[in-house]
Length: 53
Image (tube, rainbow, N blue to C red; front, top):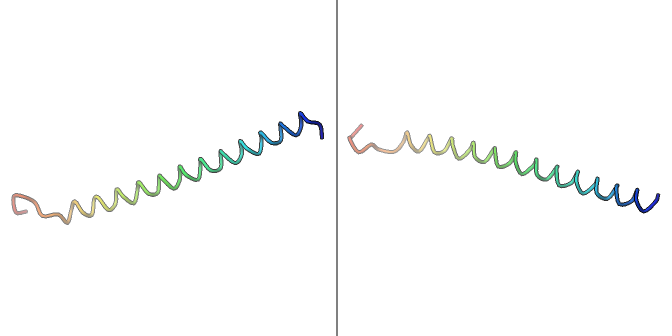
């Protein structure tokens, strides 16, 4: 393996790792935002209204 091939392989591994981590974080953040949205809707329905409804 030449130096150029080694460097190219190292960049490929780094890019693949960063992409995988980014996608994982994006999916977890998306799931978290959905959970927060559901909890907010439940709390909004359960909150007493000022006009007595």
